[in-house]
Amino acid sequence: MSATAETYKPMVKPSLRSAVPTFLVPDVAKTARWYEANLGFTFSPHPKSEPYVYASLRREGAEVMLLSMEGYKKEEISRTGGNWDAYIRMEGVREFYEEVRQRVPVRMELVRQPYGDWEFEVSDPNGYVLVFGGDGETG
Image 1 (cartoon, rainbow, N blue to C red):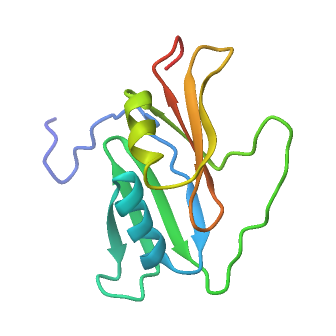
Image 2 (cartoon, rainbow, N blue to C red):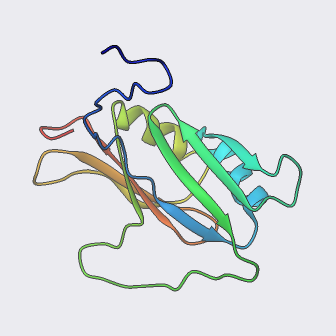
Image 3 (cartoon, rainbow, N blue to C red):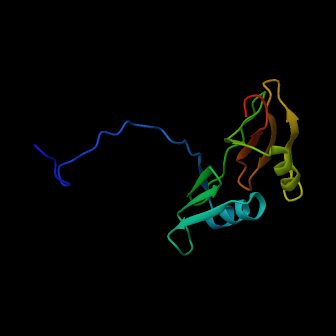
């Protein structure tokens, strides 16, 4: 018995590809433009004209999603050892740090962690904390 195009369903092994942080923001357009201007991300919004309700921000293999929520303000949380909303693994972390620190305040300066990675932190305009790390034993 041969399978036709309509009945053939190939066996595909499930494979998780990535996890994407999703941030609630009061102004998707303003936030997306900040990521573009300061961190080099490109964005694809929906709908295609403002006001946007959603945007996917991408730079190389990293992605962050923004969801609109009018009047939203992220709660500040304090935790010993850091409070991160997204950890972005990368190569060239030292070079990226030098670029970024010229444009935005750095929350944590570039430092080598005990586990080998070099990391630095920035906050976006909504208070989300991004850590960029790599170029170490685990990066």
